[in-house]
Image (cartoon, rainbow, N blue to C red; front, top):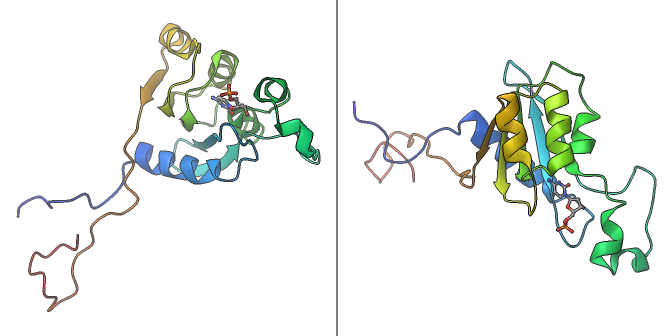
Amino acid sequence: MSAPATKTRLTIPEYAMALAHVASLRSEDPFRKVGAVAFDFDNRVIGTAYNGLAPGFNADHEFWLDRDTRRKYMLHAEVNLCSLFTRGNVKLVACTTMPCTSCAQMLCAYGVKEIYYRDPYPDSEANAICQLYGIKLEQLTDYPLIVSTVDPPGSATGTGMSK
Ligand SMILES: Nc1ccn([C@H]2C[C@H](O)[C@@H](COP(=O)(O)O)O2)c(=O)n1
């Protein structure tokens, strides 16, 4: 039996990044939207998070006008994510933006083993931090949102696989 021509199933890192991508769509930050997801050691989703202001705080229009002013108040997606789990029960984290230096340190402190990110983040020292602590840090930019399924019997394509 030959291998299917197109992908039929996402890998766990691809699945994680697709979920992080969707989570990023909930961010209220008009300048940068970041989503993150954590998986446990049985590949189950612990939770998703995104960057934003502290729960219950509603910023007015003025708040969002200046990119620099808002930066110090924003809770990073990774900070919000870490509030969902306890140390030692997380295997994998996917973030749509590379963790910043302090978020990379925090993920290490929580015992995360693998981190996947999509977009680079300027000035982040995440690479050096993860290298020192032996944590896998990898860029992942492709995460298909459509995969192949087997054609129903009698379908016209004759390939056995839907596109
Ligand atoms: N790994 C990262 C990087 C950034 N951000 C968020 C925090 C701010 O909401 C915004 C900062 O973006 P910029 O530095 O482009 O202004 O992005 C985040 O949640 N996670």
